[in-house]
Image 1 (cartoon, rainbow, N blue to C red):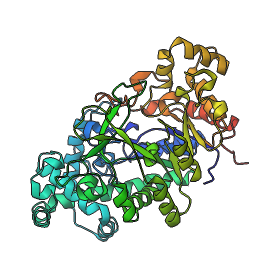
Image 2: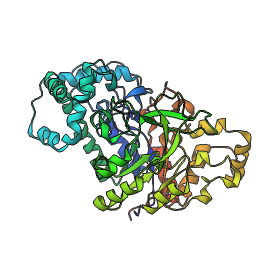
Image 3: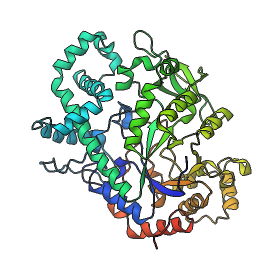
Image 4: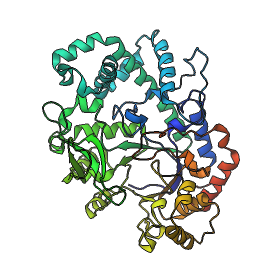
Length: 485
């Protein structure tokens, strides 16, 4: 697929400024779009928008389809005085309580109307199961679904009927939240598009173990008769981890998916392309081959590689939808087969400059190795900030970086961004923290850890006209924006 030479900023919704403890779809989202437009940026990349599960991670969600109610703008609903929130960090538990109280108060006066009924009918393929799932989560004190009573865990018809009636009001509330979420998000997306800005959405390749998807469609995954996974996801041991990474997500039953025309994936991609203009698939490698770890193992060491049906899936998707505006997060064990899968469907891959300088001139992420069909990043949501990374960079790669970039050690953030913007890559993106030249206190996520992640927020006064002007000049200088004459 042909993409326009362009650039953009990575900033998750939760990191936007605002008075209600977390970034949301209110006025600050629209003002950030205005900032992007003033800076001549054409791309806004965000993290997944699903309701975050364990650890508040957007990559571990209760649903591959639903939205996170914490992003709902409650301005027109709030009748109470706001508690004092931290403007620099998200206090998730405090925000959840605060917003849920207000939204439940609003719901007491809710009468289902025509627009709501149309939404429920259109989205019924995921919404009905998700709303019941969330109502059951609340009913069973938020225990994981595999700890629910056996009849409802196994989705026996009588149990579904029983709880659907018992939890009728809570189910309606959950649908109400999703209606508001998607109504507000569509307004944000429409405004961005009106300003010439495309939204890059991000989807994790796997669903959460404790998710509506796993509970309502267990046939899509490798489960036994008791709904325990037979194998789970992760990555093998490498130079960074002697035990590998044990993620624990259920793995796809690719044979079943293929036999049923990849219906679940078609539904997912179709919906994501309604929500976003471009979709980045996280851990794209797993669509070619994946590391399967026997359930119950304490590490990822005893896993083995298995073949996925990604090629057949993309062929099916392409027949139905045409060329797909997908970015492949192809970081990790990049084999020839993965490269071929990516290139045959013309998906741009990723190059991360923070990974470029450790292997001398052999570094595959170095700019001179980057061809057009790539997206160059200074760093991602999982990396240190560029300032923090440079401070911690060992002497040997730091010396190579200085020589390669003809760099004197000053203003590393802007030097690395200029290098990215100057590259041949069709798209280039940097996290907002790099434009603000922030140290690792502003790091968004540290993989393998469970504390202090996903919390950082930008302050409104940091998004200045001077900063927008500086970004605009760099963007024009590197032919990633075109001024109107």
